[in-house]
Figure 1 (cartoon, rainbow over the protein chains, first blue to last red):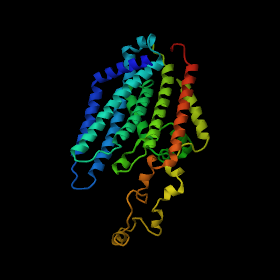
Figure 2 (figure 1 turned 180 degrees about the vertical axis):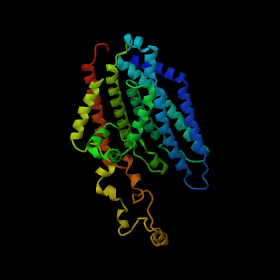
Figure 3 (figure 1 turned 120 degrees about the horizontal axis):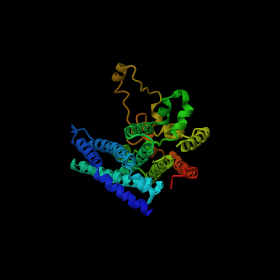
Figure 4 (figure 1 turned 120 degrees about the vertical axis):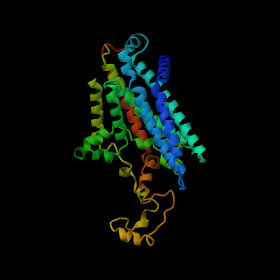
Length: 251
Length: 119
């Protein structure tokens, strides 16, 4: 575990040295500031608008972070041949994947926290109260982001980076669909589509912006269940990614 | 690389053969959740918009009031979300446990059938 943690910190430092992360954080903050500047025209409930669009922006940020942070890690290690000495002595493939994932997950978490603080600042500057569930809602979006991160790692082991991004976005979009909508894509094979849908999470489990925006309390137990659900999906995707990675010949 | 996918396909097939493993909230919701507190207030009350002129002229007579925060014909989408549907929370736990078991199976399978170059 110590080796994984050390490698995760190395990964974190190398990711923070890249411009990608700073660019994405800047885009998230600019988007939040833009949402705060939209005039209310004296329509009541502007804070709802800010909260809903702000959390939507954070969800998009989680997607961008997953793709921006992780899609290049393994291909770059392989291209630079840094993966061979790493795997030759100090690290097993499991540790390599866990260290890389953990490092990217920490950076993603820090960026989402900055986004959440930005949203709180925008609400405060506009004279609105900060909903008590805003931070837990952001944490659920972060768990969704970790799942997407695991998906990006999975694709990075057997596709090229330019193909990784559209595939991840496709998974993201399809996971937003209800079972009925997903089956509607190919109504002739409803059984097959229903079975395929099992692979994808119900992303609406992570979305609680509507009750927050309308001032409805969400029970604490729901946050825990939704977090468990997201973590279970991330573990599952990582296990499949590792199975693929174990089969790869790095020579 | 094919082996994990074969295992996944078998697991999915087993789950799929088990019946309707995946679901939408509206599919599994009990009647009391779908009907809601104000569900019976609209019997004989047409919300269709075919006759626009009639709708406009009758708007004042047909005006009705819903208490905030209650399911009605306009808020079904709101209450058909997982946070508002406690009857699916046990399914969330069920799915999580299945995924963790499946992850363990994939890891074990890939380790047992792994190639020589791995450590």
